[in-house]
Length: 274
Image (cartoon, rainbow, N blue to C red; front, top):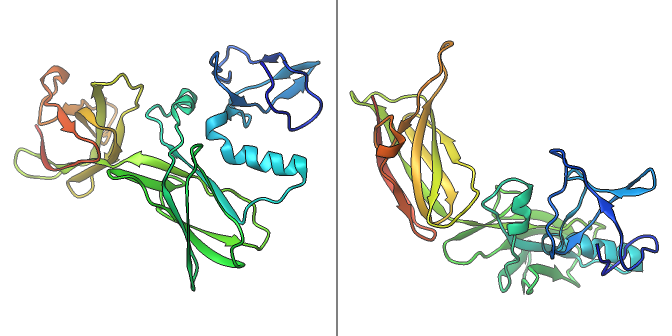
């Protein structure tokens, strides 16, 4: 690997970093830039996916922290990063994360609101804030959700009180499919519905699902495209349950695809289980 920036020790212009071929191997790709956390073992530098190694473009705030530690400089009062949520949930999906620039970030206290924009690398920073408690949120583009920790549209943080943790947000698509699941006689069933991405893009996207609650299901944060819905009943007894595909068939080839636009919601689907 070529070294573009050093945070510890006197690394040369290039280093050899080893990763094994097991399930713990880090999936490096040629031509990409990484923030590398390596361990020394028997004179060799080794890396696996359990270290903090990440593509540099999704490690912007960690790089800020390391520079401040190395140079003895102060971090902003509040800072963070906004990047896309990848379709691939595995480590290979880290390469799909892209910074989202030009988003408005608001830090709201009890007395005043402060605003800034995300930069080209997806980072944002507030400096010179009055000490106190703030609610931080990112205004997402149309048809998107900007969430902290994958669940909340805002996060509370202290400014000027010694906190130095970054507040990173993920930008999700806001596609949604919802409806009801029941038997032919109208009785609700118990189980889960999964949306399997069918195209048109080639995404290594895992099925996204939700539990059926009182006959209703809802699957959110879906990319635009075609989806095949499949219902799996709750397991009962030793026999393996069979799936049912929307709108009500056990043959995957007979499933009716559900089309989602960019950030659109398809509601009111009727899923019949026979």
